[in-house]
Length: 241
Image (cartoon, rainbow, N blue to C red):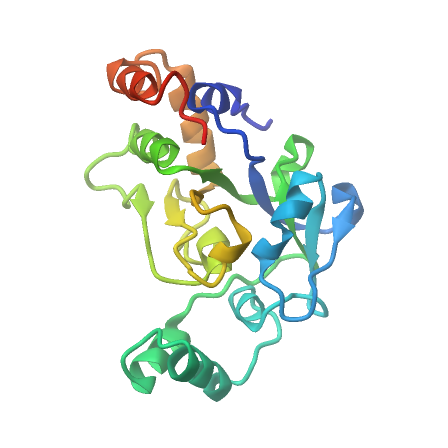
């Protein structure tokens, strides 16, 4: 059964829809659907998500070459990507460094023929891979604190902020999707033009999503104590953007 994030959304005044990434066998369960335009970033679907629509990715329609690579789909030749990312966009100091990053960039290999990215659907929870909260810095800070609520010192880091594309931060940069972990995302400047200036992304694996909902239900947690009350008061009664 899908957990309920209502307490988190209410306490933090999160207005944006939660965005799920799904690996599912039947896209009809996620209708209405939209397809990516040619070489289009997945975050170009931001307005469609607001309308309740889900982005549908397949081996034939996957948007930009970056998302094709990280999703284990057809990929652009390595030399072209290195030239683009280093030579045109200046993301590494040398082509060798850029090529080394590209070679090590993790991929997600879909189990089904359809990847779907859009509004969270509790009835399709079994196919859910990650959940993204689109939040302001105040909201992000509280979620990052909550992510560590059940963490032990010898556990994997509960929150990481790796370099990568927007779609990588939404899925493939997790070393283990079955582990409770979060990524601070929307740090890819190429995809930020599709978001509002104040927005950051906080993407969590399904186990971390469940932990956050448990954290929210615990009245002794930081979601219900003085630090948050002080922040809400300082912001005039709401953390909403």
